[in-house]
Structures are given as C-alpha cells and as structure tokens.
Figure: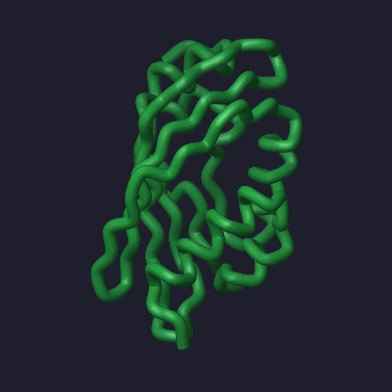
Length: 137
C-alpha cells in the first residue's frame, strides 16, 4: 500500500493532468470535503469552498472549479505524518465572474488505514476568496 504522501502526490499529479477520475478513486465513500465547523468563507457562501460529505460533494467542487480559469498551481512542498499530509502551494485563479486572486495556501489531507482520503481541509486567505466570489463576510 502506498504511503499517505504518495497517495496525495498522485492526487496532485492527476489534477495537473485534469484526471478527476483518479482523484475520485482515491477518496473514501464518506470523505469529508472542506470539513470545518465554522469557516468564514463557507458562511459567506464561497462556492468553491463549500463543505460536504461524500463523493458527490467533491464532484460538485470540480464542477465549480471547471467554471474557473486556473493560471497556475505551483506545489511548494509536501509535509507528511503517519496519516496526514499537508501540501503548501501557490494558486492563481480567475473565477467565473472574472475576479482574479493569487494566494499561497495549504491543503490538509487525512487518510484511513486503507490509504483512502477521509477528509480534506483548505487553509487559505478567506478574505481573498470571499472578495473573489463577490460575497461579504
């Protein structure tokens, strides 16, 4: 079985190729996507940071993402423990409304013993995301 960092590295490689099926296959059926109890961007209704449980929530994320123009995703580092992997990256995006933002962010991935992703959390400058979505906090 691949180590958690290898699973997450394969997810980013698949993302770069536009291979959503490979990403979806790495997820547990009950994956908690953008799992937060209180996140200002979610409260404001930023569509690409919407939380949910299950693969349908992740499919919705990719549907929203497909309406955006991604100019750059530069992975800076992978930091791993036994069951979690943090990924530092820079992203430059234009939203479907034409707003553009650039941010240095983290994704925190949690995996189960079978090597499937059970949770993904996105750590970002939520003010940038709220503004880019045309929302207010």
